[in-house]
Length: 149
Image (tube, rainbow, N blue to C red; front, side, top):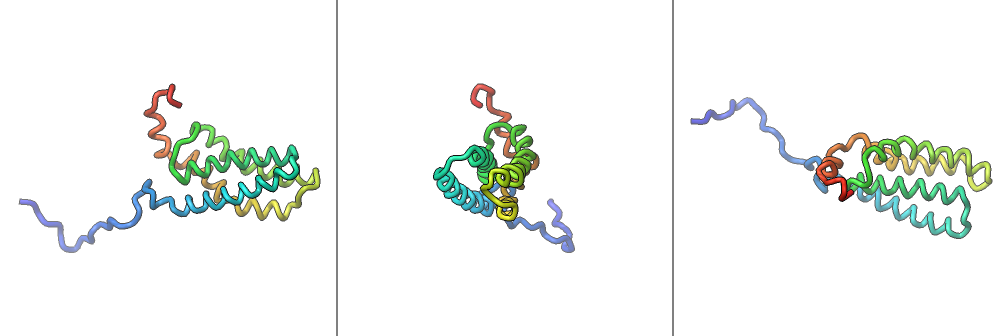
């Protein structure tokens, strides 16, 4: 006969979102979609006058957006090592573009760009977590044969 647990032990909670479940990422998905919409509108404004700095900034932004969407939707995109490198290069390249390139060509100020970087801080965090703190996302990728990548 099975013994009953002692009456003084508290039951284990089983509520809340399960790690890796779709409900655990609702905030990230909403943020990713909102930032994607803001960045698409920004791309449309950039098309009015094409500049090398704007194209470089847009390229950096698109790669960062891919990482944010991969993290929010828990999908492996490209290779994990790429995102480990991009987690460092992404904010550094944005800072260089905003504080060195734009002021030299006269298209922006430091204050406006710093405010934009603060708005996109969660995106930097998501790319960092995507590369360094989300091994569960990349587990399925290891099981695929190299020819399917």
